[in-house]
Structures are given as structure tokens and as C-alpha cells.
Length: 426
Image 1 (cartoon, one colour):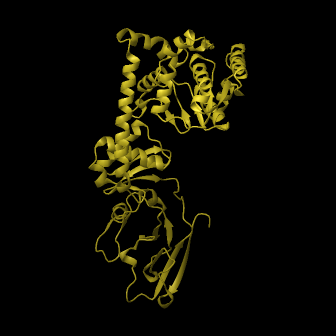
Image 2 (image 1 turned 180 degrees about the vertical axis):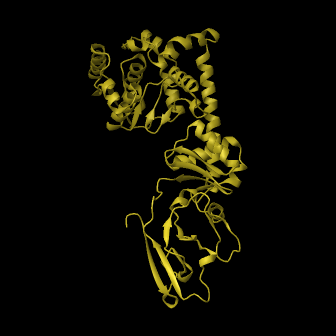
Image 3 (image 1 turned 120 degrees about the vertical axis):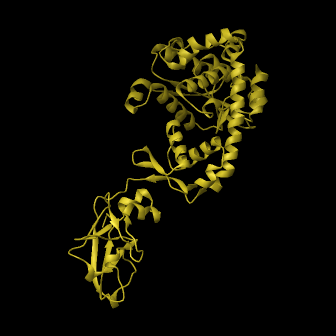
């Protein structure tokens, strides 16, 4: 057993000489074997060992006895013992999280709060198999079936290639005492149903199913790493100006497209689930937009796929108008201007409306404001923020873009009206 653990540590380069290793210890067979291994091999590995235990407040006296059991072991072996006691059920409810999720988060927060170089957890091969099956049942992609990583940051998992049965049998054969968590026998939790009801059926089909699934997990990791590396090589070419170039994205295999899209939106603070990912991929070959969450959208035009935030849409416009003689007029620092003497009635500024049309000055045509925005490549999330300038007869211009033919300035212009649209906080 020692050699198997040492081989795993070496294979994944888990330790360095002089490391302080914090072992997460529940008191069960897995964690007691792991702690016992490190205690007995401290000198050989040239490491220092600490232990941490979380008392979840769920199983009454039994839970308290687990904490006392681990503390006594640590005291007997001169190992620093760290304890955190929580009321997982009530605290999880108050936080809006499930008990398992909340407990996991608190556990790793506690581990990270203790000074150490590495955090060793007792996840084993059986845990890895259960995790992959659990993810498959709930829905996952290739990354999900890569399972529990042997190393993640400072977290190491030296038992990840050893089955739960081998661990328990070794503890019994070598007089390593451990506690039994009776909740593991209950099927109230999904993982327990997999462990207690589904996996025994797997064993009847193939007694070596854990090792076969371990090979599958290993192959999945190799494939995922290759695709990730390939996608990263292309990402810098495709992600330009915080947008994805569609002509280049289209040429890539769909597996690589997925990784690039996921990476891009993750950088925008959006985690795409499978349904949203597939919807975004559909935009690769057509223009349009889809809602990701709230006011956040994925938008595609003829050239780019990008993230768009529609939250900053003004309901009304504040603006200042000035009337100037032509010799006083300068185009600088104004959002719109036209020939004042060609205006009918009063001037107002509003947002766009369905059916709006304009005849852009010197273009000899009339078109919808929507089509004009498309031609000018105005981002869709910004269009409601663009002021539409009107007089009593209709639209006379689009702020920042153009005046209507009817009110354009020419050689006969004597007076000019200018408009400056104010920011909302002004």
C-alpha cells in the first residue's frame, strides 16, 4: 500500500522536500489511512504533517466522538490538530445552499485558513468513479468525466488510484482504527444511492469495473487536455478586441469551437451550461442574439460573436440645445447639428421606435433606422441609448451619426442648431 501511495505522489509530483502537509481527516478509513501513511513516512518524505477535522453538527454524539477520535490519534502521534465545529444544516439553510455544498465550501475555507504548503484529502478511486457517474446522470461534458483531479493548486489526493475496498481491507489487516459514518449507509443522498444500490450492480457485470472506469477517466483527461491546448493556441487569433472572429471560428472543429466559446464567456463572467452553449454555437452560422441571464446576451453579426450587456438603456434623454450663427458654429463637442431654419416646430430627443425611418443627408435614399444602425455597425445593446432627434414633422437626425436630408446644412445655411446629450448623472 505504501508503495502504491508513493507511486501516485511521484506520478503527479504532489510533494516537495520540506513541505508542510495538512491532512483533512474525517476519521473514516480513507482519511485515517492517509494520515497514518504521512505520519509513518514523514522522515522518508522529508515533510511536516498537520491534521484538520470538521465537526458538522449533524450526527450528535457520534459526530463529537469522531472529532475526539481524530484528536486522540493526533495527540498520541505528536501531530498538530485543528478543529472546526459548524451547524451545517441550519447554516446551509441560512446561506441558501444545500448541506453538502455548504459543508464542502466551509471545509475548504477552513483548510485554506491553516498555514501549510499542501492540503491532502482522502478522495480515492471509488470516489472518483462515483463522481463521474453522478455527473453523467445529472448531465455533463468531457470535462465532467475527467473526474476528481489528483492535483488542484495546493490540494493533493494521494489515494486517487486506490479503491475504497483496498483501503478498508488494508486498515483492517494493519490495525489502523477508523470510525464508521452511519449516514453513509442511508440513501437520503444521491451519492449514497449510487454507492449502495447502483455500483453493486456494476460489480456483478464486471468485478473490475472501477479500474476500467479509471482507464476511461484517464483517457478523458488526455483527450480534454489535448483539445484545451489546441483551443488555447487559436484563442488569441480568434479573440480580437473582446470579440470572437466568426470567419476563423467557423473553420475549427466543433469540439474546439466549444472550448473557445466557453473560455470567452467565462472571461466575461458568464459560465455557460450546456443548453446555453449549444444556443451560442448556433449563432456561429447566423446573425442574432440569445439571452444568457438577465440583461446579458450573446450577439452575432456577420463578422463577430460577442458578449453584450443591455442594462444601461436610458428611458429618457437630457440634452442642451444652442442656436448659433453659421460663423460661430463648430462641430466639436456636439452630438448633432442641422440647419435651424429648416426645422418645423420644436425639437425633441427620444429613443428609437419600431418603424422609424430617415433619409440620411447626401445619400439619396430613405431607410429604416434599424437598417441604418446595421450599416453603421451600432452595437445592438447600445441602440436604445442613441438619441433620435425629431421636430414636429418627424425625424431630423440620429445623434452622433447623421442629419436628415430635409434639415442638412448647405451653402445657404445662416443659423445652426446644436444638441449636446447629457449623461444620466448630469
